[in-house]
Image (cartoon, rainbow, N blue to C red; front, top):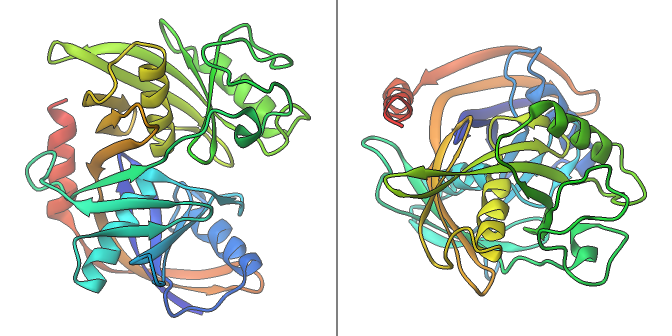
Length: 316
């Protein structure tokens, strides 16, 4: 099967993105395609595979996201911005409700966060703090900056479902070794959290004389990642929930991949505005029955977009 795609990224979280509205493959086949295309040892590489899917009575289009291991995520907010941009371009629209795996999101085109940087705003939520929604097998009350029994860490976490599961701890300085050890433990699907979880260590910093967040995440199905959009959203909600930032206050959220502007509201809705950068266009032959991929052909490059994003990063 010949697949056309655009290589894109949101805050450095990079993906091949396929317009799959007219492609019929079952979940197992898409999982094989995802493993083939997201493999960084091969021609394309990425933090997963994004699919633009068709509309229905209430959603302007949909998004699916498969991790590099072939598992499907409930959501991916960096990927959502990229998928929404493509969806708006092919449908000739600029705003609408987007169907995700288990929820919906609002998306719209907004003013660029920097010159030449295509920017999409998304709204998701309300988030859930119920332990069962986060996938935890312990507790009946929310864990808000609290020790989680059975978790091999003395840190205090806020457990948030975006709806994908997040464990967020605020730290003075990120210890990546500690983060990876805890992330690896969660990735093994222990009895405490059998559906696994995204784990983030968050530093509270300052930008333009206002509080800012720096987020480092071990992403479920990926590992230590430079960027995870839902982790930035979960961290923003956790920061407001614990009084580190105000409800309804726009906050800059940084990670290794870049920066977004985020706002957590008291009703549980989180709004994020960030880049949706298209880097290049390509096509590749993939056998969906085996996951074997052929040679990549790059059909176009978006050099001006890449340069605009790099210029923004240089100014951070």
